[in-house]
Image (cartoon, rainbow, N blue to C red):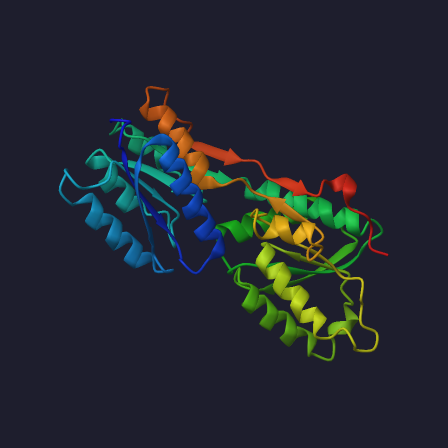
Length: 300
């Protein structure tokens, strides 16, 4: 497989997602660095459409089809599509998902085949430690999650529960990754007569946008009697122009910085096609707390 002008097709999940937009920009910058020809498309949240589109690329003319497909799957891990790519010698790189078929496909092709994902369980563990730093004597928190059943949601929640102090009570609310949904969900919950029984001191969200939406919801109730005015807000992902900036501006108290997956995947791909050893089947990026755990002070 040639390294010069390698054709890479990147398929992401939804164009309206700021996180996906950031991953597209990182992919474009990395492709320019390595001299790759890049195309980026979005599946708009439709797993069937994503599968059909990728199959159409794989079955197109050898003169025009991509050398490598890089994708974040909308639904399943797309093993059937991956097998078709391997069968015709197209590389297959999975983002943000652990898959169990890489070794099987490497037996039938020498094309690059690997997965790159954040260590989501460790992300959850870090957030559990952030909660402990904010509530060392215990307390209460709202825990905002993404879509039910999503593997990232499950891994982050499991990791958080592994490290969270048992004296911290968490009330889970599903907010689907989006700021607007988090605003609506938290607002609706706060209109219930029983919400103050929890009296949350911290909002912990599985991404920064949900944390910001929750903050906007709480701001609407700031003048109510017995309102807990010292609520702290912590999120995940830590995009430079969003979560990291919101922490520096004081809109969020903490985030967890997760390195770009597309940028790392492009670097690993470039090394392999330049003659390096095959990449590990699974590459995990390591998240970091921002600020560090030692810089988080307890809720007063």
